[in-house]
Length: 155
Image 1: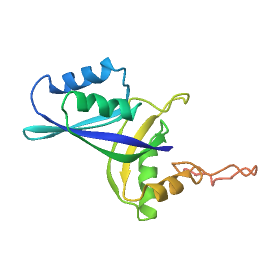
Image 2: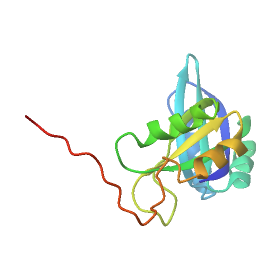
Image 3: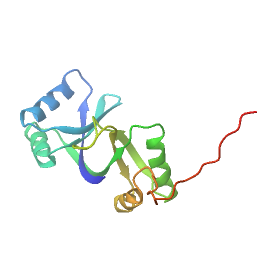
């Protein structure tokens, strides 16, 4: 898990606008870690996390696309049912509000499976600390003592 810079742009909602922006980023070999496109009438809002924030911002400037930036949390989400729900519950337990969230094209380089959640919260430092304790989804560290679970009996 780490903090990353995200770029947000608003483009006229017409065919080819997103493709042109992505083409300009591609020419500079900027790779996107995550992307979300949201319709809002005559304009679309695009949020993305580039692998090279500075290069991406320079590309947007060079093609006259206004942009905003924000710091977001990138959190590995295991490929298992309820994993993202557990992350949300941990943040809520510490009164951390999720402003928005979206997922990535894949996990962090060098990890296996899962996805990467991009989460904008009201307190990044606190969220990072909360999610670092025993892993983002609240996995308990093994103590070496086996845990016995009650068996379910069917009558």
